[in-house]
Length: 182
Length: 233
Image (tube, rainbow over all chains, first blue to last red; front, top):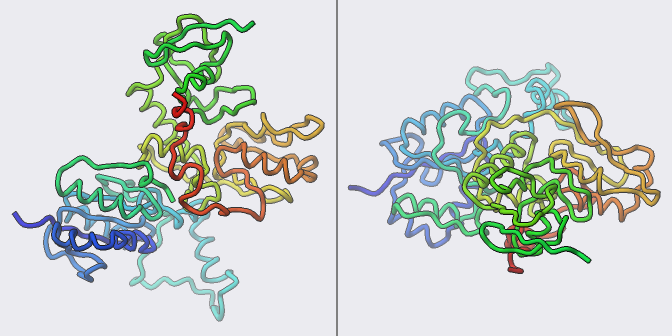
């Protein structure tokens, strides 16, 4: 049996969770011995080339493309993990959830103080651009998520422990200091 | 003279003063019963239900139930743990609790309880209600998004004449805490800080202040809520 295959993606996130994954420091060498990476911004593989065992999802779903990618991950990965507050509850992008989407777009493209030269008052609507959702959705409200790792970002030790526990089949260590929501 | 009664908590024999509330009796015996709407020195209300224990087999709130002779109290069992977890999760989904952007993060009792019960994700869908931020007071910001309506500020904060500064307004699912515009206008710095401290979450904040303790040194960064009580055992 080959090494477990891991894929990662950032939906409506800031890549902070991916940075936290890199914060495992020299253990990244051990990780490469343990797993093989497929579609991920880390190795810049853009499309799935095979079925994966573990999918790490950063960020929630704020537009149609996020939903598409997330559903693709669900199809391709045996286990999906919500990594970070945004994937778990929408995070900071979800702060717009109490404001109607029309107001958000008008503030961004028409009425905002940094808007210049939009005299025709155009809100980008090219069919190539993913459509914004009415609100930002946590990943588990779109597809089934198997595990959740909270934190903003989740501590590197938490991501490491979770991956190692999954791969080796051992119970995960959860010291008090590693489970934080910020 | 105070009368002593004998009780057991999770099978541990404890002594308590007659008339003492279970939560305080447990604390004196080095046993932590989680609380949220309860605050030392403020009359208990029993509204958040997080302190629910089994008293002789019945579910009771430990903050409002006085001890009596031979009471058998269960504080830790799987059913109570799940009940408490569900209550904490409900608080998280019912409001807008964006921990990464909150000034109280690390010092928040709701968050600390979630840490203690190792809550990774709530079992209920997020409500994302539309709530207002009231910044009309010169000393305090009232963020309705984070308020859990525990009434600690209403019950525990009074001015020098004994008047309350906070009150419930509106009804049903729209109920929120209002700051009295007249008395609140002359709020002292001391009372503003006291209001922020009595708030278990980040709903009451002193203006022009925040994030002054670095991550890693805040109240619940290294020590779980209640560990100070359990240390005394």
